[in-house]
Structures are given as C-alpha cells and as structure tokens.
Image 1 (spheres, rainbow, N blue to C red):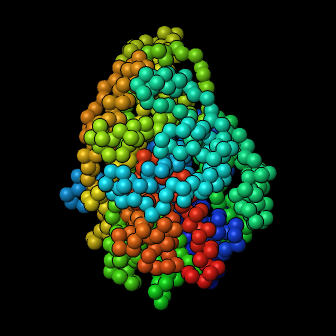
Image 2: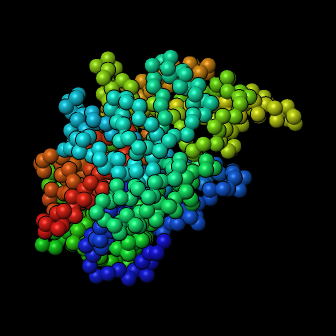
Image 3: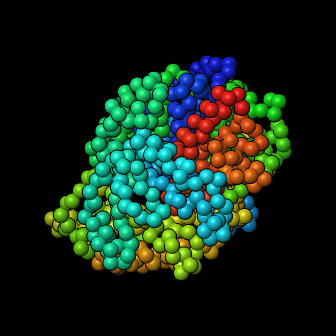
Amino acid sequence: MPLLTDRKTQPQYDVIVVGSGAGGGMAAMILALSGVKVLMVEAGRNYEPATETPMFNTPEMAPLRGDRTPVRPFGHYDATIDGGWQVPGEPYTNKAGTEGDFWWWRARMLGGRTNHWGRISLRFGEFDFIPKSRDGLGVDWPLSYGDISPWYDRVEQLIGVYGENDGIANAPNSSPGVLLPPPKPRLGELMAKKSGKQSGVPIVAAHRAVLSQPLDWKNLPAQLFPGNPKAQEIIGKDMMLRAPCFWATDCIRGCSIRANFQSTTVLLPPALATGNLDIITDAMVREVIMENGKAAGVHYIDKKTRRDAVVKARIVILAASTCETSRILLNSKSQDKAGLANSSGQVGKNLMDSVGTNLGAHIPALENSPILNEDGAGGLHVYSPWWLVNEHSKLGFARGYHIEMGGGRRMPQMSSFSRLDQTSPGIYGSKLKEEAKRYYGASFSFSGRGEMVPNKDCYTELDPQVVDQWGIPVLRFHWKWSDHEIKQAEHMQQTFAELIEGMGGKASPKSGREAIQRPGEIIHEVGTARMGAKAGDSVTNQYCQTWDVKNLFLMDGSVLPSNPDKNPTLTIMALAWRSCEWLMGEMKAGNV
C-alpha cells in the first residue's frame, strides 16, 4: 500500500485518525470517500496481506509444525506479525491486590486487531442497549437498536457477512438480501445441532465476515453511498477485486484474495484510492495536543528514528483500541492532571472482557466418519445465540452467552494425534495408520462467549512508576470477576456437558471458578471511556464526541457502555460509520 514512509506529511489535515483497525479504518474510509483530507497514524508497521499471508503453507513448512509458542500464542501462521499479549519494550502492569491479572492483547501492525479474529459478526440486540432497564445493573446506552440498525445493514453489505435470519429474541435479523448464504454444517456440527434440539439449545447458521459469493458490485455501491458517484465508483471497483472464499485455509492467517474482512483488505484500499488518505506507520502516539481548548493534533514518537513529531488537524479521532485510547487520554495532561476529556472521572473505568470457557471431548460416533463439508470456511459454520434471554430470574446470574463450536478434519497440527498415546500406545506401521484414520477428527468442543457486568473493581490507570521504551507511562490494570460471571461460566460448563453427552461423548465439566478464562484472554476488552446521555457520568455522547473537547472523538471499543455476548467488531464499525456521517454534518455547520 502507498504509505508516507518518508514522513512527508502535510502541514494540516481535516482529520487525524489514530489507529487503523475496525473503528479507525472505517472512519478513515468514510471520511476520505466524502472528500475529507485524512491522516492516519498507526503504531505498528506496514502490512500487506496480498504478499505476506502464508495462506497455502502446510504445517511442516513452519517451526514445530506451526504449533503455539510463547511468542506466537496462536501458532506460527497467525496473522499478528508484531504483537500478542506481550510486546517487547511495551510492558503493562497489574495492581497489587487484583484478583486476576489482566492480559492485554495488542497488534502492532497496519489494520490492528482486524488481522486477528474469528470473523464472527453478531449484531447487538434490542435488549443489549437497555441492560439497566431490564435488570438494574450497569447503564443503558444513549441510543437504541433502531438507531443503529441501518448502519448494521450497511456494514454487513460492505464487508460481506454470511448467515441466516432466524427470528431469535435479541439476535436481530438483517434486512432482506443483506446476508450472504452460509456454508452447510460439517458432520460434527450436524450432530451438535441434533443434540441441541434434545437439550433445547438452538444451533443455527453462524454469521461471519467471509465472502461465500461475489459481492453485488453493480448495485451495492449506490445503496451504500447514495448521491456520491465518486465513492460508488471506487467501492464498485474495489468490490470487483474481492474474490469469494474457496475454503482453502484458516481465516486467522489473513487473506490474500480479500475474501474475509480485515481493515487492510476492505477499508484501507478504497480509502487510499480516493487520494484523500495519508498513512504513517511506526508512529507511537504519546498524547493529544491542545490549543485554545481544542484538540489540535497528536504528538507521536517516530519508532524508526526515535524522534518526537507533531501532526495537526481540525479534528482528532482516537481509535487506537480500547485500552490504548484511554492510555493516550490519561497521558494527555496539558489541560488537566486527570487526563483529557475526563471531567466525569470515567476514563479508564468500566473495563470489560467477554466471559469465556470451553469444554471438549472425544465423540465415538465420529470415528471413521465420512467426509462432509470438511473444507468450508476457516472457522465455524454454526453457532448458538443466547436462548434463555427471558429466563434470567431462574438462572441466578445476569446476562447471557452465545456458544461457538469446533471440530472436524482441519490440517493436522502438532497435537492432532495425541489421543493415540492413550488409545493405541506402542503401535506402528499399518496399524498406526488405521488408528490415526479412526481417531482423526473425532473430537468436538464448545466455547462460550458471555456478557460480563461492568463493576468498580475492573479498571485501568497509568502506572506511576513504569514507562515503556518510548518513555510513555504504561497502563496498570485491576480486575475482579463478580459472581455473575462465575455462575455464568458454571452454566456454560453444564450446558456444554449436556451437548457433548447428547452426541455420545463423555464430559468432565469444571466449576465456574475453575473454568473461567483469564481476563483479557478472550480479547474482547471494551469500556474505559463509555458513551452516555449525560456528561457527568460518561466520556462521549452517542456520536462518540467527547463531552469536554468538541473536536475530539473516540471510535473504538472504549466507548461501549456494556459488553454484550456478541463480539464487538461489527458494532464498532457501525458506530464509527454513523458517527462519521454525523461529524461531517457538524463540520459543514461549523460546529466543530
């Protein structure tokens, strides 16, 4: 991609966007397509999926057959090229007395964390926007599902999401014709679906940001950008260049044919095609600079030269990812020691992650099973929306979870035949081959992704003692799960065990406290600068505009007031698109 690697930026832009992931990429694209001059500042290095994605490598081409290592926790072929839960020279700390050490995932690369995710794209539902009104916990959003529904449609049409409308409460349908057809279930998924029917757990087509067929490049651009012929032309040409998935490899490796959604495959190419977007990478933002009570630009460290630099614009959008955005605000102390846009005291507070736990087992009925849709999309074909949305009074915990599932005959990995150590020790030759074929693909697992309730014990702040290699104070985390999350994890384990036993397997469920995964491990952290209806208890309004600084916007997961069980990426993009259209109206009116 054409980047400003020589740092020859313009003296003044209309908008600076910090971060290039879901929120930053969407903001930059929408603004650039409308003629706004945008500078994107990215802390990581440049990344080109078309040339850097090892889509067609087989496991034996990688060290340890591509298995996980401490520095590659999702395996050698994970698309995250510079990042993970630990980034050299960029530490973070956990506060004394915390009940759980928070793990902070970062992706220091163009496109950010959109290069690493399962592409599961679920809309928040009507109830998700009014959690306090339903159970008295947390806060309600300052907008309703009806306010954001049209932008969900637009995002799904732009990025391409496969799935079906199932009419399940709080799992909204898309408008007719928006979703692409889903791949058929695999054999194990069909067995899970049968077991779910016995247990009363609905298992339906997954919603994932992967093209199952070509996009309608002739008609969609006009629907998405009415009255903007230039945007229609650019988006139409770009949609033509995206190929549908041919079910060859794992999505988490990235996608050189642009079938799956990453900011680097869907948002940044058309934004750059406008000529209105400049990008500088390897630029670590230290703080937002202020002049006369307004945001005037950002101060960053050029990671290649280690020199300080300043870029300026009329508007500043922070989309650096949830915790990084709060870190920049807390470190921007030119106006207030509490940090920028923090008159409410809410910056850093209300940190949330998804509740996660999993359970798997050997399924004898899958031994020597026939091959059925084993290629398919590099991820699940079916999932379970939360089905007990109106029965919380009987459950003993608030909110709910959805279920993801996995199994089948993916490319053999390091541990794919470890079961033979138990079932067939000491065998070799033709007997080993027979046993390997018998057990390969006969395991199946369930994972829960649940909603946690924001609480006062989960927050982040600047560590007063520690700085990173760039001299910027690091974040210090504090965490404590409430009983709601522990009981929810327990319910997940019991449900997964029932589904496994319904498939003919033997399950060993754990207690909720034993089974719940580490905070930050699910990589769905949101909150820390929530939006709200009043300046006194929130950081931004419903359009992601900070109450304290009118020309400063936050467009990532930091603004989410709650963290429903659905993955946040689709909602971050819908909010960013909606907010950018509102912002352009404010710019034209001279209000910012």
